[in-house]
Length: 319
Image 1 (cartoon, rainbow, N blue to C red):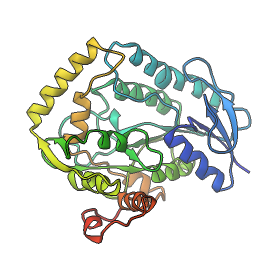
Image 2: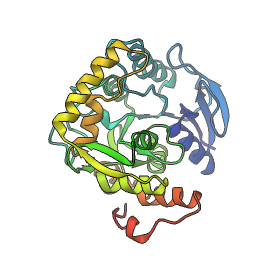
Image 3: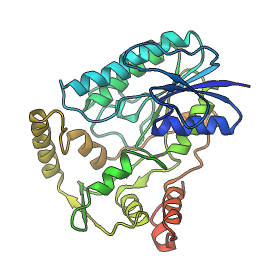
């Protein structure tokens, strides 16, 4: 029986990886500050010491500090301690074992030219500490011969970030999005979990991970709102106004570093620019992204005791 160590197994992505590994018959070590959903807990604080990986055949590193902290803040320093220094500790402890390191599409350089991002797209100029520290951490992982996965906007059951933030921004029946409608890649957490388990047998290097097709931003947001029973009209905020609000928000965030900015340039960039990942390199390894946003919204609707009308679901392409 293969033993898989999953770091961050109490978190959103790590919990899905651990559960899928156990369902497929693996022995699972849940490495992190808290126990995972299955297997044996191996306590580890990524910011302070190396993990105990004895008995593991494969390591899937999902542990990460996430967020959009103010530059120079204690939160940014804490993020680096986990995402960069913690990676160095993990790689040393892995001692030659296959490592699958979960990165992020946030490492890619911002700006135009992201309508079909391949893995050789420039990795620099990240707009926030998360992107910068993930880029630094994955550079260590790539140098050590790991497989690095770059998902974008991971969503699904138990999501504590993406969908809750969208729902929280509805005001008086309206949701303002920056700029005009664009194409965006999203990643079902089930697709990411499947890739994490498959990737230990892939050639070292970086691989984009996302749903099979991109989504139109506005239609995807409307479908998520509808599935969650939130009645709201999607409106467009002029891009210049959104950027101005982000600059002001970041300035306000510096005055209140423990609160965080209400809006950032990174958030505007992620929503207002086309960002589509080319996943052909991972697909060429035999990986198939079988889950899509329609599956997620149908599951949410069923849990609420209703069904998604065909007219609503029809706004989304099959993934």
